[in-house]
Image (cartoon, rainbow, N blue to C red; front, side, top):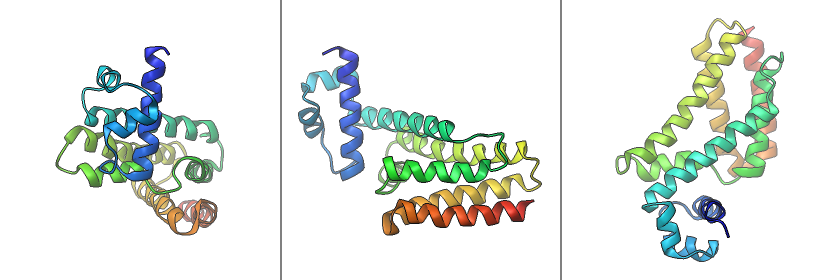
Amino acid sequence: MKTSMKRKDLLEVAERLFYEKGFRGVGLKQITTEANVATMTLYNHFSSKERLVEEVLKEREKRYWSYLNKYVEIDSDLSFILVVEAHGRWLKEWSYKGDMFLRAIEDYAGSNNEIEKIARSHKQKLVRFFQQLACKKGEANQQGLANQFTLLLEGTTSMATLIGPEEATSHSIAIARTLVQQAS
């Protein structure tokens, strides 16, 4: 097995375990066992559990943004709605048990600045994304609209754990339509 494939296996297994059991609920031994790699292989790729968590979050963020970019047509009249729909698809396929980035902020607040920084940066990037979208659409209250849509996606993520991603997304799309209508 190529070294890069082992790294990829470690990241995939770590992400799944961290997502299912939390960052504190998973040890490196469990990750190496499930990834079928030696402990030394893990340390050849990641100097510590914290570095592994950082890389898992970075990879997850890349996947999230490529997912949104795949489904969202920025020039569409429905671009805000398309973002909400794409986020709902993401929840159904990748984030049905809550938000890994919020968990990282909660678990590592004040104890590891890089992990918390990566997670907070992901949230800030979402706000900036909506600001840019609002600017491109010529909306008057760009910051307000960006905050509203970010809150909408965060609420959708939270509610997906209670009522399921499909129903949470359905409600969010209805709210998104109202927000877009009010902004126009």
